[in-house]
Image: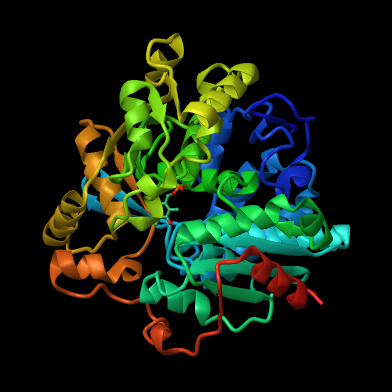
Amino acid sequence: MRYLSTRGGAASAGFRDILLGGLMEDGGLAVPQAYPHISGAELAAWRRLGYRELAFEIIRRYADDMAPAELKQIIDRTYTAAVFGSDDITPVRQLQPGFHVLGLSRGPTLAFKDIAMQLLGNLFEYVLAAAGHELNILGATSGDTGSSAEYAMRGKRGIRVFMLSPHRKMSPFQTAQMFSLQDPNIFNLAIRGVFDDCQDIVKSVSNDLAFKARHHIGAVNSINWARVVAQVVYYFKAYFAVTRSNEQQVSFAVPTGNFGNICAGHIARCMGLPIRQLILATNENDVLDQFFRTGIYRVRPPRQVVQTSSPSMDISKASNFERFIYDLIGRDAALVKRLWQQLDSEDVFDLSRTPHFARVADFGFVSGSSSHANRLDIIRRVYRDCGQIIDTHTADGVKVGLEHREEGVPLVCLETALPAKFAEAIREALGRDPDVPAGLENLERLPQRFTVLDPDVAVVKDFIERSCT
Ligand SMILES: *Cc1c(COP(=O)(O)O)cnc(C)c1O
């Protein structure tokens, strides 16, 4: 399998070549030259597979430059009951007949990002050992991504993590999750500022190419191709869980921010999984819902991003969206390049009066958005009718999923986090606290390890420099 850039200006590369990288050299994203098609016979055989076997069958088709035995061993080590709570890894539960929730949040940080990130940690360690060098991961987080990366990379040989977060601005649970880690290769840098300050510092450091090369600085952001591939697996797993035969179709509702999760659903559908609808749900930051309703993609300046009660979906633009647009416009890289140039200069492109936009339905996409009042209402209804507590992001998915639900088509809503992470909104909706998973009851009382720094690029560089010796 070779990988191309969505903008057509980079040499093709293998899976291992793009594993540690972010953007391709021309600024585009890596995409496989074709999606492997899964035959009816293969699909029938896959129905019997457990999570690890299924993951191996899917991922090996995208990572064919890794020795199969090594890949299998890495997958078997990653997806265990010890890490994900059960051998099912992603259990499906029913809320009502024909309406299911796919549990993706049983990993160490209680959000779906663990599923891909845990694999990434093991893949990175393997590839770095083979190449004989180290990696310093630098990132900015307002919550889920940072903690997921830290739990995936803790204790890994050859890897350090420097994670910037806005000082005293994450929820107490999220803060405790990250700062209670005592591993010497994890560095929590609490920046006196807001999330955008953290992001700006990461950008400045990454733009200093000499510093970046000298210290082997890398990232684990949501455009990482291996993360997307790892997420394809659970669409197959959930499909088999809620159907009896491969004649049936299933629709998925996906709480969406950077378009990584639903991009994996799009890929599963292109591989031949009988998905009827991919129902994209946004919160008040609805740039993607606007696109799917109107054909106009208008990104926002960071200062216009609304802070919501589903904060992991608070985005100004969706970093993985370029992968879908590439497919939507018939893999025309020159056109993608023009559209993103326009986006850079004018913050908008418009496909509304093109034949491309008319094909959105052929790709199964529909969309909707949700407000704070909507998500509290859904949390109350699910609690009252089904006796279960769902988190705010999942509630956005349920709200939009139900609006598009079709008679006779099973609907699966992806549970992207557990409610324990967002206790304040649960208290507001239900007047009670969410249950805290076993083993985490004392999390907020554990000793915390972090360094407070001024929002200053030189100070952060100096910290990295001193920690790398
Ligand atoms: C990251 C995240 C999302 C958004 O996922 P994308 O892949 O960025 O679309 C939704 N919910 C939760 C809880 C998340 O952490």
